[in-house]
Length: 59
Image (cartoon, rainbow, N blue to C red; front, side, top):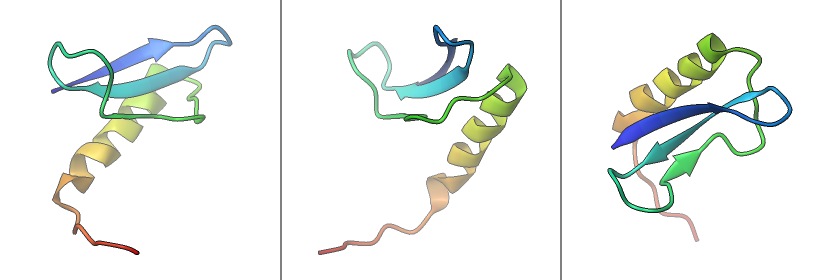
């Protein structure tokens, strides 16, 4: 898997998590844009740390 950071047409940074070379993505920064690549990479680190988060089933 790989995280990609990219700049949108409005000048905001976003991230997306891709599964190797497959089309599409697993997760992304949705509507939230970041002002700098530093802020975007911090958000990526938060997602990376949450990989050990508990999984729960909801109805």
